[in-house]
Structure formats: C-alpha cells, structure tokens
Image (tube, rainbow, N blue to C red; front, side):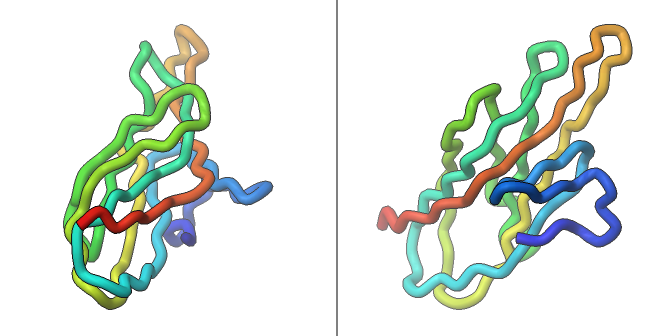
Length: 119
C-alpha cells in the first residue's frame, strides 16, 4: 500500500508503515472468488486520553468498517462482502490528536493486512 500524495507525516521502515497524522494508505487488491472475507489489520497505536487510533477501512470508495488499534501489535478484524476482481483498498487514520498538556500523541503503526474467505 502507498501513502496518499504529499503525506508528510508517513514513514515506511522495516516493513511497517507509520502515520503520524490523519491520512491514508491505499493499494489495489485482487479478489479471486466472490464472498465474505475477514480483513485483519495487524497494527498498533498510541493513545491520547486513553483513546486509541481508529482506522477506517474503505473499499472502492465505500466505508466497510473501522477498527480501533491497541498499544501492542495485534490483529484487528472486520468482515466485508467482496466481489471477484480488482478493488481499491484504503486504510484511513481518522482520529489523530496531540495533547500538549500530557505530551501524548496518537499515532499508528501498521504491519500487514490479511484476507481470509469465510463464506
């Protein structure tokens, strides 16, 4: 997946993607067989006021759901109905925040996306 154009607060390192402000990464996926899929987003994040990063999952311009990351690397899942063929997958960081009072900064680190056909 590639970052949105002019995304200054994005970093790719060691196979991971980091987003330090609201923005997105996207790419094309190829679905071989139509059906219901479990999308697993492997990632982690840092909270502000005990609220962790939210990643909105967008497929072909339509929101299919969102996941809330946690402090440790973990898999965060949702279900989506997908037709066969190519699809544009976008992962959007939607709740960036920085608290000068506490020094907390909500950020995202993503490792991979897994797809598993469930029906």
